[in-house]
Image 1 (cartoon, rainbow, N blue to C red):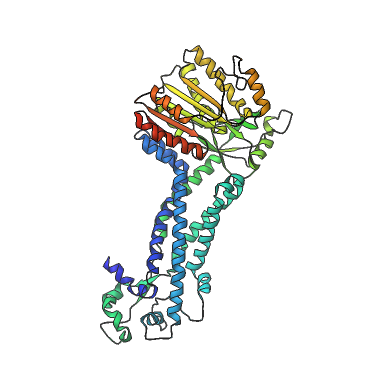
Image 2 (image 1 turned 180 degrees about the horizontal axis):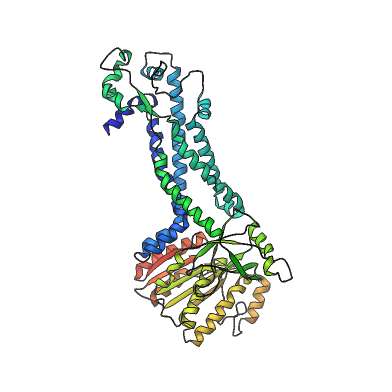
Length: 534
């Protein structure tokens, strides 16, 4: 440690504390840039999740927070980049001041003059007093790559804001790929070796703690020859080469999958402007609640969009439901004939590529004895897969399932959204009644918004045997659930049990449920919160 301190002794004479403020964030940047790619290696995470969930359900659940972890690491990269950049601005200012000093008897100026004679190594990277910090910034490898890295990072982070990502997904998608430029600049940033220090061989002959006061006699005094300096070798590549290799392998796997043939076997246009695609792909195997990435080359050769699988593993196909909310989904809707009255021939359907499936928290649903499923709007899609699998396991296969009770909650803002999912619930309701298993599934459907005309119709039809909206025996509820009462009821009904709470929905609802899980778990029943992340 003392050796390292002595090597930077003269560098600190010129730069002072700004040297530490530049080098410490640089070390943190190396560490965080090593981590940033790992959470987006989806195939690696799916493999790890499948490997460790047999040993530890808690450890597997941590992998479901990969996007949150990715964001936190990105914020730390932005913070340390800002500190590192500001510190180096001060460093360049002090290097320039040391070069411009008129007092040649000062140690900082003498250190800046070293290197002017032949065969001498220099300490101050600014070699002329006729230049400026701006010129140095754009004419050195470290300065130029630093500017490129910073601009790339600013564009990546600003385009990742929620409002941009949801309203202009293409902007987010394309800008995010500036990470390639970022990592190239990062690896090259240290090649210029702009931060220099005393060489190890020079330290053997020139002890800075003893010789710094004799700088006027350096060279003439044999005990204190002129110090020699060298730049630090680039270290960043050692930190990021491993994750970069893993990410390249990840992209190669995705490319291979994208070339595999996918056949669209059925297209269903639901009235709620939801498009259902049923597909087949050789060797495709899935578990409940998993998701895929879908690409349609006729729309874009680069864009991949995540969709939860709504089919069950027991079915001979896999399906997704797509809500038409943006340019890409609208283009897919049109390509599949959604805006045409005539039936579209199979050969006219667009070619699609599928990457996945990838694991999610919902994979663990059958590892809990009691389960709460909470979906909001189109967020019900992962639970369609789960409920279909329940139907196959209990009704068709008579399989022994560890899960003994499912509480299903669906919050929806409009009546049209119930249409595509109500058929599944009606089938489940009918089959469970025939099997004397009506207590197995407890479902609660909430309509959170409604129009006056709908309210009048509902009021008239409310006394009917079946619900006027869903056609189910269970009546639709209006407003939002009282989660305090719901959790308390479940806790009292299942004392001492571990209840898996699974959500696919917005962040405010996630915070409310996570808080309930923490509060209600203190009463004996343990609620374990799981949220879908894409």
